[in-house]
Image (cartoon, rainbow, N blue to C red; front, side, top):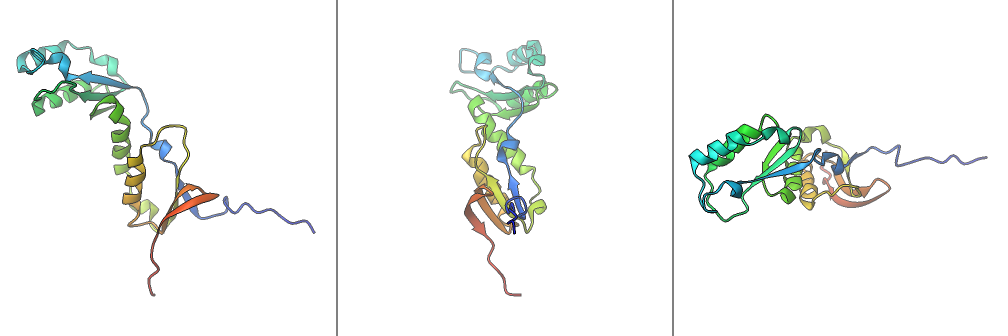
Length: 172
């Protein structure tokens, strides 16, 4: 009698979460406030407003915008608000961060939109391998978000996982 091979991974109740799917889409561009500082130190409101009005905001269409100041200057909070008010109509996303920090903040923003109740009582595998860089903070955050509701959380691939969390059995 011929033995039938059964794919136990395909038939399992594991739910795989691929954090790579949360990677931000689109190019990341920068907007450095230092280019608008008087003498490299001070942001003057009138001149700043004029510069923002003259700026070609359409070049950020469909792109992500990292807003920051590379100089050690005191920037009033309204300056960031003004940049957002101009760029908001064009940019896909706007974050107050240096361009290299954008991916991490975008991950955290997308993970915050997850409804943990969608994973209540489930056995979860947080996929470990990816083609795009997934920051360590994303692994920490997904665990923090889902641990209160998940039955178990594992890291890796369904065929080879590292246990991270397992809900204690309660007396019924």
